[in-house]
Image (cartoon, rainbow, N blue to C red):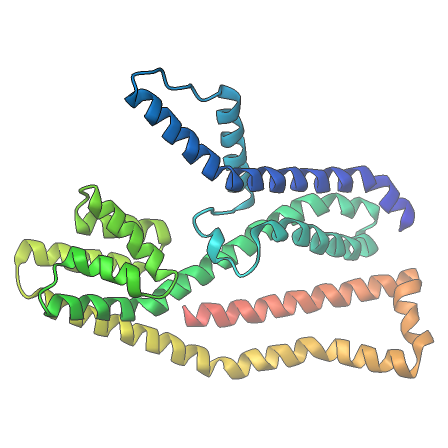
Length: 317
C-alpha cells in the first residue's frame, strides 16, 4: 500500500494544490468585492469631474473571470454562500480528505491504480456538498413562503400597494426570505414589473411557489378581481403543501431512525470486538485479505445507506 501511495503521491499533491489555488482564488474574489466597488465609485467621480476614468486592467478582469469559472467548476454560488451551514472554503479540503479515505478503500480492492480516482472524487464531493447546501436553502424558502405571503395579504388588506408590501416583507421576514424579497424590491425600484421580478426570482432560486406567486399577480392584473382574496387562496394552498411535506417527513422518521441504527451496528459491534479481542480485529487492518474484506464491507455499507436514503427522498418528492 505504501508503494502505491508513493507512486501516486505527485497526483495527490497536485490535486491538493489545485483545490487550494481554487479556494484561495475564490476567497480573493469574495474579499475583493469592496475594492471593486470603491474603484467603480472612483471612476464615476472622475467622470463627473470631467476627467478620464481609469480603465480596469485586463489582467484583473481575466483573473475575475478565471475565479468565476472556478466557482462554477466547484458548484459554488456566491449569492448563497452567506447561507451555507459551514464556511464555503472548508468544503474543498474536507472533500479531498473524504476522497482520500475512499481512495484507500478502493486501493485495497483494486490496487494502487485506484488512487488516480481521488481528484475526480474530490471534485464530485465538492459539487455534491454545495448542491446539498443549495437544496437546503430552497427548502427554507419553501417553508417560509406561507408566512411571507401572510405579511403581503395583511398589508394589502389595509390598503398598502403590493410593491410596498414586498418591501415590508424584505424588512420583517426571516432569512433567507428577507434577502429574496429585498432583491425583488431592488428590481422594482429600477422599474421592473412585479410579476416579471417574481418570475425571474423563481427562475433563479428554483422555488415553484415564487412562480405561483408571480402567476397569481399576473392573472389578477389582467383579469381583475380582488388581490387580497387571490393571495389568501394562494397562501392557504402553499401552507397546505408545507404541512403535507412536514407530515410526510414525520412519517418517515421511523425509517430514518432504522437507517441510523443499521449504519451504526457495524461500528458498535466492531468496537466491542476490538475491546474483547484486539488481535482478531487487527487482522482487518494489518492483513491484506482483511483489508479487502474491510473495504468491501465499508463500500456495501455506504451503498446500502445511499440506496435507503434515495428511496425515502424519492417517496417524499
